[in-house]
Image 1: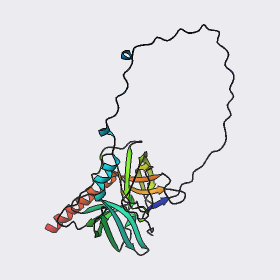
Image 2: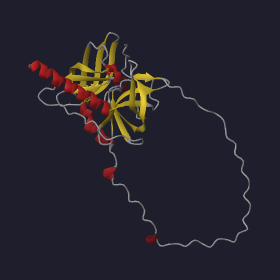
Image 3: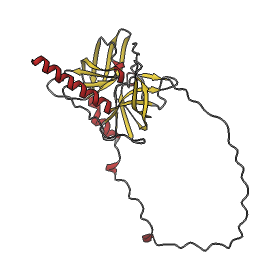
Length: 269
């Protein structure tokens, strides 16, 4: 499968604009012959419903806090493939150096490098495996003496209107932070290998080529999805992006962990 120069699957969508004008006829209302109504009874303020209390500032999502809490765990990924260099994004899911990205970012990769955070060193990465049918891949990097800081995978379901944030490397611009909302849930998209991916999140947070594999974060800084595709006329952001839900990532990691444990047991024998 050919890996695009920038690692983002672009789905083209044709929008149909329906033209035309609706004509409304208005007739003059007849003059009323009823007696004039009596003036309304004015109640004291204490007898009226109390106005809603303002939302405390602490309850309002703080985008800067989300970015500051996640940036060191988001990586720019470069993969050398037979077709050239593929650029995407990934994020840390375990302290011992596991990262998640899209499978199409590292497809046919001969060499993969990862740059963590805003000032992290470039590290070589190994593709441990993944699930091309879900367009997900697991990478491993050496952590050194200090463990990495993983992002937390959200377990609560998202709802339309929830605020979300994306961090990625669109067009090679690493650590780009964008915001939006959940536009829809339960969407279906197609993986690069043709497999259907279900229960996908749709968002209007700006996602462009190079964002693939990066995290879609909620207001608590938890990962609700993996940014994977966009629907666009011209190949850029038209406000229709798709993220593979975090529950699918959790299932993949659970399967990988179970497989590692089984292999370790077999080796021990």
